[in-house]
Amino acid sequence: MRFDFAAQPSRLREGSLPSRLPSSRSSSAAVLSQDSLRFDFQRSTTRTRSRSSSDFRFIFDRLFQLGGSQTGLKVESASSGRSRLPATVGTATTNAPDLGNLSGNTQFNWSDTVGSTAKDHFFRFTLTRNNRVQLQLGQLSGNADLRLLNIDGQELTRSQRANLSNESIDRRLNAGTYYAQVLSDANTNVNYALRLNTKGNAADGGTTMGTALDAGNLNQMKRTYRNRISNTDPTDMYRFTLTEAGAVNLSLNRLSGDADLLLFNASGDEIAESSKHGRANESVKRQLNAGTYYVKVDSFDEGTTRYTLGMSTEVAGSTANSGAGDFANGSGNNSGNGAGNGSSSNSGNGFGNGNGSGSVTGSLSGAETLSSPVFSRSADVSAADRDDLYQFSLAQGGIFSADLTGTANRAGMRLIRDANNNGAIDPGEVLSTKSNLSAKVNRYLDRGTYFLQVEGDGSPVNYSVKTNFMSAGTNGSVIRITRTGKNSGGFAELQVALERNGKTVDQMLAISGVASKQNFRTGTQSQSGSMEPLPEGYWSLGDVEWASGIKGDYTRSWADPNDGLGPVWISMEPKFSTGRSAIGFHLDNNASRGLAGTVGCVGILNKSDLSRLVSWFDNSAPKLAIVDWSLGTVEV
Image (cartoon, rainbow, N blue to C red):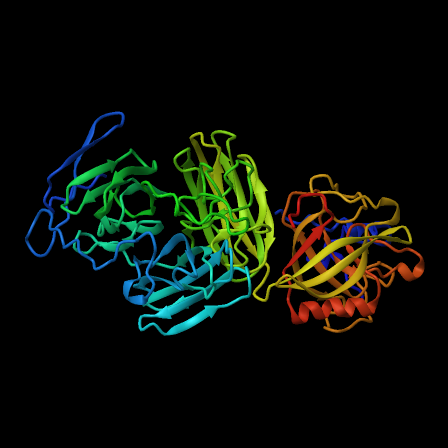
C-alpha cells in the first residue's frame, strides 16, 4: 500500500531530501502556519479635598462611621497591653516585647547580645491567620541557638548548629500567639542579628477606626499589605503603634485605580495626606512620637482598585538596631527592612545592594500576586517607587514570555525564581535580566513560583508589560536538543534529551540537515530550502503518526522505502518567526544507502532509538521541544 503526501496534509516535508521525493508530491506540501465619579451621601461628610487636573475637581470625603447612626470619629482605647521595645529585650516570655500582629508580609530585624548578661532573649508575636514564618539568626560572634515556642512556652521547633553557623527556622503556623527565643550558654556575650519574616495573607482592612486591621508595633518593622477597595468597600483602615519616636514611611503603589493615603492620630485628627491624581503612587513620611496611629486607604475611582500598602519606620536616635544588615557578610545598615544591603535608594527592593552595583540581592516582599502567568499591566516607576514586582506560579512547565514597552529607555526587567522560598533575591535566582525598555523575556520555566520585576533608574517612566505562557503539558516533560561539540561523518552530533521537571530522563544522538550544510542559525537567519539544521528556538510537538496507520508498525515507510522518512513522523511547529517549515522527527532512513541526512528535520539514527523516541511520547507526552544552539534566542 502506497501513501500519497497530498492525502496526508499533517506530514509536510521540508525535512526529507527533495531528491528522494517525487516533485508532484513535494509541491503539494503546504507551509506551516506561524505562528464617574461616585458621591456617597449616605455617609457623613466633614472634609473636602481638591485634586489638580485640567480643571478643579472637588469631592466629599467619606468619613468612617461607627456603630448604628453615630457619625464622626470614635476612637478606641490606645492601650494594647504591648510592652515597649527596650534597649535589652525580654529575658522571659512574661516580659517579652510584643511585636503585634504579623499576619501578612512582614520583615523585622533586631541586633543585640546574649550570653553572660542574659542567656535568653524572647520576642512575642501574633498571627490572626495561617502564615509562613521564617526566623534567621546570623552575624554571630559565638555560638547561639534559635527556638520557636507556642503561647504556653512549649517548644515547637529549634535550630541548634555548632559554633558560628547561622540558625534558621521555616514553619507554617496557624493563627495564634508565639515566641521567638534566642539563647546562648556562652560565658561571654554573643553578638547576633535576628531576622523574622512572615509571608501570607492578612485580613481585609477594616472600614472604621474601631474595626481597623491591627498592623502591630511598627518599630523596627516593615509591613506590606496587598488589598483592594471598591464601590461596596471604599475604605481600608490599618492601626499601628510606636513604642519609640521615629520617622514613619507610608507608601501606596501598584495601584490599578485612583486611591489616596491618609494618616491619623489616636484622636482621629488627620496628620498627613497624599492625594495625587490618577494612578500615581502616594507616599507619606512623618516624624511621630510613641503612640497609636491609623492609616486610611481611600478609593477615588469607581470600580475595584488594587493596591500595595507599605509601612516602615526609622527609629529616632537609635543606631544599634537600624537593621540586621546582610547575613552573608555581616555588614550593612538597612533601616530595619531586612533584605536590602546598605543605603541604596531602592534598598531591600530589587536591584540595589547599597553601592549601585546592581547586585542580585533584594527583597521580594510587596509583590502583586497574580492568579495566572498571563497578564498585562500599565504603570510607572520613579525615584519614590523605583520598581514594581509581580508574582505568579506555574503548575506545569512551559514557555513564559514578557514584553516591556514604554515612553523612555530608562527601565528594565528581571525574571526571578525564589528557589529557597526565603522572600529574598539570592545569587543564582535571577534567571533573566533585560536592561532597557522594548525588551523581551522568552524562557522555558519549570513549575514553581516566579517574580517579574520592572525597575527604573529613578526618573519618572511609564511602562507597559504584557506576558504570555505556553504550557509544555501536565507532566512537565520537554525535549531538549543541543550540540555535543563532536562531529561524525561530516555531521554535527546532536543530543536529543527527554527532560521532566528539569531533570534528564533519557537521551539519544541524532543529526539534522545535510553534511555539507552544517550551519546553525536562529529563526530569522534560517531560510527555507537551505538544507541546514533546524533553527534555534521553541517548537511545539505533534503526535506520533505511523506510515501504515497501525501503531507499532515499523515495517512500512512513508510514500516509498527510499523516501528517507521511515515508518514514523512527529511534526514540529516553530513558535517563533522563521522561513523554515515542515520540520519534524523521523528515522534517517537512507543512511544505510550512503545518503545520510535530512533537509532540516531531526534524523534519528536507528530503529532502536526511534522506538525509544516513540515511547517518550507514549509515556510522557511532551508537547514542547527546546532547540538550543547557544545563539542567544533560547534563554537557559
